[in-house]
Image 1 (cartoon, rainbow, N blue to C red):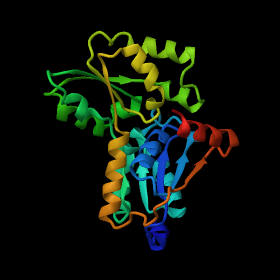
Image 2 (cartoon, rainbow, N blue to C red):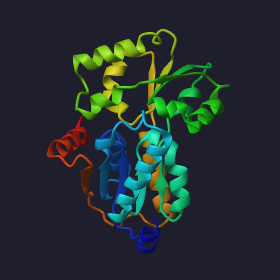
Image 3 (tube, helix red, strand yellow):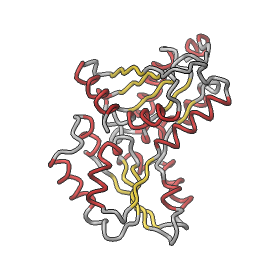
Image 4 (spheres, rainbow, N blue to C red):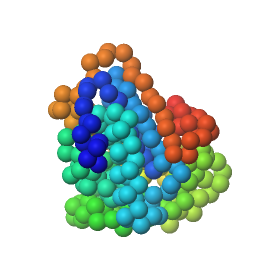
Length: 265
């Protein structure tokens, strides 16, 4: 850590680092590219250790810190932890370790879902660990007077995205079994894992037009834009920036999957 601190020399034309436990954070990367298209991005997915959401807290924290430090050594001028589980487990620790780095995490978009009119019923889809962590419980308590909030652990769902399966019949059956007990009573669904926006279309089909879907990707992108601007680190380039994908699996297929998800309509 001390070595990284000593070598930090932030420059506005360095890339923004984006980290996730796998390929799910590419949904956040897509929002970052919409909000700040001129920036360069380096995305690191730790697919070899995925999923994080079923691991012990200390292991998640250790992996997250190690992978964020990898991005800092690659010259990242700011870090987006594009993983709800990793954010809850490690972002506060990372901010204490690197107070001069613009560092943004992501959390379930519970606020806009809970503040809908008429005391709505909100289903939060997330990894088992996200729902267990204190950060999520605190967030839920903040809005429990405004809405009925149901936390739904979804073990196994992120693995569909990790293998590139975002519209298969087996995925549809999985989601039907997962969601069917709740669909009659809920008003909205919060996608509390960055992998889940890639199966949003199928969730929308199962839930119907009455149920609104929320995710935190765009808000995270806007917050990183705000922090980079405040730190004087927005790029001076006018042309569109570059995107580089790296993955702990170090396989061509994983990089190809990353590009496919990034370009997916």
